[in-house]
Image (spheres, rainbow, N blue to C red):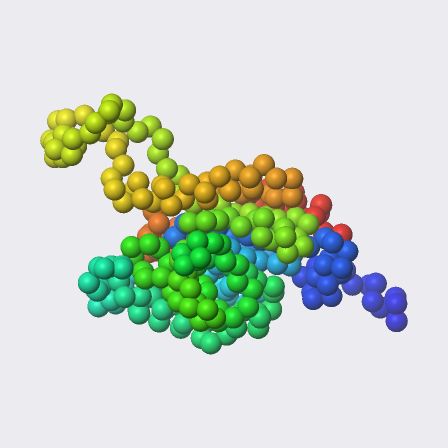
Length: 314
């Protein structure tokens, strides 16, 4: 009997292998950051890990990372995750649905109904605790001014809450306590520390956040909007880089997130990856295949294949 058992190589992706890693303190976690359409590259990382036989024992994320992570936790297959994510990304390009969802912009530009429908169509009424892999996501609770980590409850609602960009969608009311939840990226865009606190020995963190320009114009002690308007309208004038009100609000919102990211990068338990996705914009969901392929063409495969033999003991 033992001879027959040892004839086959151990399946690193089996539930028993995952249980062995958990019991021996060798859990491997994959954490997926937020970044809009750039997050489609997360699937390329998952595919690379599968090809390198590198298992995932725990998965979580923020914003688009919470969406891709939930798909993989449900499917445990990069191929199926890619298929379902592509279908959803195509629905995000529907101009008709977008126009119909416009509302009077007191809280947000859109009512959120169309976006809710698209997320619910993907996950139906599944609960987080029903997924095949342990999963978590992060939201920003603007009622309590705190970070919320969700490990159970309505899957589509907490994924939607984690993807709620200020100004575009209204906050989602937490079905448990009614608190208003927003995009988790405002407080922790790459929650590797959460995975570590959940028992992971090694955390592979994928950063797809936007890179802010730093070579901004030094305009002195005061700034005239008329001067800026002239610079932008005059085709012969030298262009100046000055953030508008929306960009300033965005940068302020992500200040704490940037500080957290630096802590993650310097930690001993975290393997940090940034795919080559800087040329893509947050709402480029129509470029799903191009973003996915861009990662496969990068050196991430080489790095992950190098890791493949060193992380897994069981």
